[in-house]
Amino acid sequence: MTELTNRQKDVLNAIEFYVSDKGYSPSYRELSKMIGIASVSTMSGHLDKLKEKGYITFAPGRPRTIRIEKSISA
Image (cartoon, rainbow, N blue to C red; front, side, top):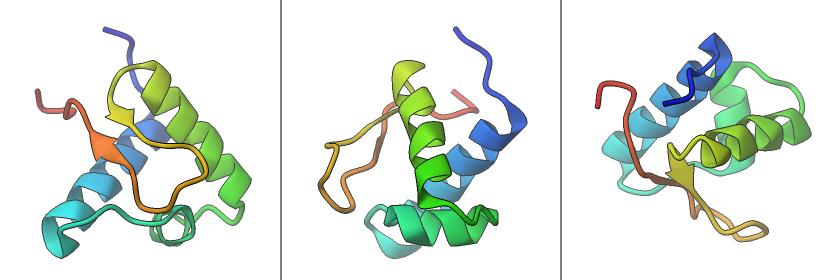
């Protein structure tokens, strides 16, 4: 399994928290605000890496489609 960076772990934890709290995934903008990243483009890059590593899936260009495939604790 490919190791996650600290920032990628932060992003994945934030997604897990949001989904457990709200019942649906956060938007890129909401996720950026939660993590303290000013650029939605930078957040998109982190999400792309998490997808490449098999932690999440999502439909590009569609809102709130982030789905967790495996957790950090798994």
